[in-house]
Image (tube, rainbow, N blue to C red; front, side):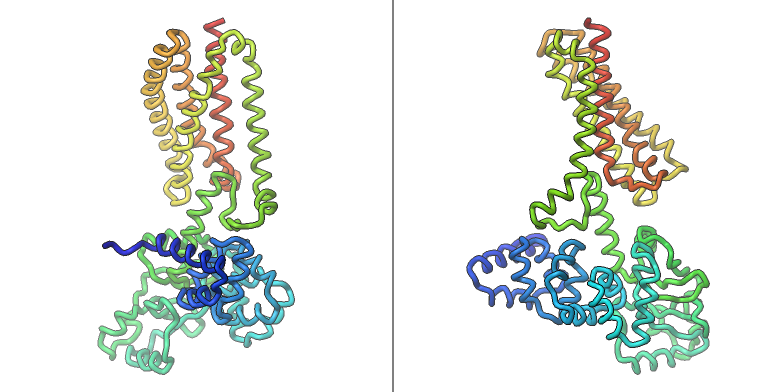
Length: 452
């Protein structure tokens, strides 16, 4: 029998937790939490209602509270922090690595921030300031300053003795970073090389000197692409002067990839990936009201276009029955192109160099599919209503709308990106408006010209 996948395990865990909460079996919940990784606890908390979440949070081991806070999304983190005492927050923050602490610190109340900073020694405070000096969505914001550096003029034997003296390595350490006396980045010394090459070799002879470091100001999305393309586990980060300031590890990049995927999916509906799924009704309602208002305006625009052809619809009522077909076909076709282009932009595969080629290809696809489905829909309409003219008009309108939908689906994200807007955020709302308006104008306009 196949082992249950991670999703099934999470669902079973969630069901057991909710059942135990309802039965008042709090010790069973506490025992369950003790067996869970902080990331799993974070996912469980995000899946619970507000009241259930507070009960479970009170049972989380204080030693892992900081790690749990680092894993939950922004809205859930804010709600948990509001219920914690300053001393609890300081203790939770103190157990975190520098990069995770840098992510958590802005969400803490001012009093807690001051206490956390005072609790750090001079070196840790300097490290934290180094991370906080860069925007969160850059390599500098992602990096961890806990690095192991070696000089190029020592032997591998000296490096090995130094590591034994340290006693432990930072997580995800697959290579040591070679720097000069002024901390300028020179190259990398893989652990495998250190263990397999003769100990008499110098670091200069054994190191990789042609592997470039990542600029601290490079966007996080670009960092994720580098890790994907080079199959990296970790990478050094340097400032504008070429000095080593930290390193990025694969676990941080996975978070970037996950957040990017969530953003692309939810952004098409105008939603935020950091929203609390189980936030109070009024909070969620308020967050979504804005986009519903925008959608109302676009719907009113489409209704106004229909109103322009009210006389035509009054005389030929069957048009009202067929209108949704044109709009729906255009909407689906446009969404397919929109999704492909947004994904291409996110992966760096679509830019000014190939945008026209992609646009021409998508328009050609829209034309081909438009002609294909125009014949199908026209044939169905003729059989249904025994009217060749309406069937032909509907077919032509579908071709027009599918071609325009493909064009709009390619152009909208490119234009939004050029003007500095997020291509994923609200692109679907704009596209739906365009396909509705063009579809109604094409269908009802042709019907007005040829049937009245």
